[in-house]
Length: 187
Image (cartoon, rainbow, N blue to C red; front, side, top):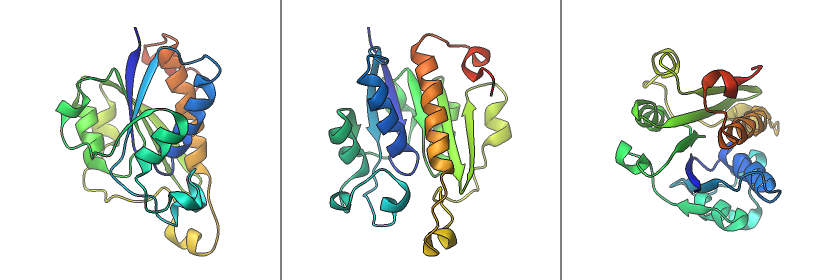
């Protein structure tokens, strides 16, 4: 029986996670995964510089573009309450806001939270200590790129590093390594 995963966010990190997951799925590494991508946002011109989108994707919904391109289910909704998570076994966070994180962190679901800003990146997992130590609800929504760096034509790749490490942890999850110590490995 396939386990259902929800990737929340299809931008700077989520677009790369979808790409990497399709790569492994095409090689038979994720036969147990049924993935849905959720994002209400549309592709903007600036997304082309650091996300995995094409010029013809501008103005289209991110989740729909990624879902169709990589043959995953998609939903154009915003996650606003925990009832939207009920059908999923794993939640993958690739979002730019704390409200969605809070909803997922408070749920009883196992989650992997991929974050980045500029060249920096972090991966967090559900644990008893995680929510209180890393969630800042007052933090505003923001891009994984620094705006001034984009204006200078400089693209940082922390989002891609976060996405590939997150993908490795998603693979571990679907390979049956469920405990935090097994999933985190040497990180």
